[in-house]
Image 1 (spheres, rainbow over the protein chains, first blue to last red):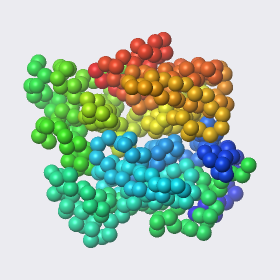
Image 2: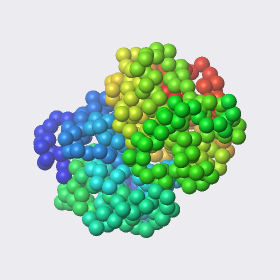
Image 3: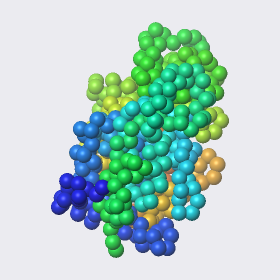
Image 4: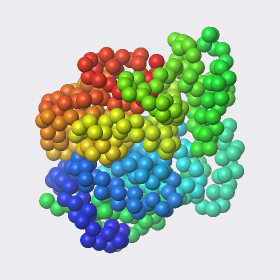
Length: 217
Length: 253
């Protein structure tokens, strides 16, 4: 849901945030009006307001994990994590994270991409946020939600038992439901969200919180 | 002391504390790549223990750590924070290629106190020093740079791989071990005369930092210092930076 309809109606910080975004037409392809947040992060006051709005919202929600989507999500998520005392988990393009990872495919306009996360970075039952700069179709965030995962109850109990056995046999982390980490994604949060999402309050069953709509030229 | 002898009791204690803290976060077997030949308990000590003496060419995973290289204003509190920070960094062998020991900071980010201490150490150094710009190098520089920028009142400027930044950019080519890469930044992100600190997670050969220094210099910005969490001293990045100062928290030899 959009911040203006969810407690921040008329908040001057939202207008300042929207004004700090630069629209770049026809990037990366003709027809796309790119929402450039680099002018937001280079405006200290507005960048601070952005992080404060998220920190104020999530401070008392018992969140222990803030996951950020590479690379622009990395500019926002760590500050939010530090502000609420949570750990930060990077969700990355394939091949970037060393060690053992799980991955999820998601659709692009043309073709597919993958998002990866470290195995064992979250414990079952931890409460998590997913942060990115912008949500359009929700494909990337949906992949992130699946990575962090919420296991069905029976699977969760079995997973905890299995996890103890997993100490020695880590190579068995292959089957779909056992790979899922079982964190509870409390909300996905983005600075910018396309207006079509107003009708969709949920993404993959998870609430979505957005500060502003895309800026017009 | 023979490099293969057991670490002293103090060092074993520290390694055990580190590994028990980490085992509460995730299972050990998932944590390590399975290609280490040593038995799990011994490889825990090898990887977690940052304090074993005697660097050896045949056992490069044992590295001596010296904290806060170039920190000219050490206070007593700094050492405790730095040893905790160093203990949270994990080494992944043979990533991204065989023979490379990868310094993984994601485990540091999983420890909120260590992450906060990391940022605090940089903020203490740079606040009230008239730093206008924190330039962070994609992508791990994006994790450390913005919190520092927010805390000291500076703007954050991302230094990116090619074709990621929209609008008008300037580019700088730099050498990799094999081949070259290109770094870009926005024209107009900075003003001539501004003071900048460049932030990245790690400095190896110094090639990436040098490219960032050149880019900012072309726009009339003074690079006051480069700041990294980790330095790989063997790769002599500090020398490659020449007169440009470098500040790191953890120095690996």
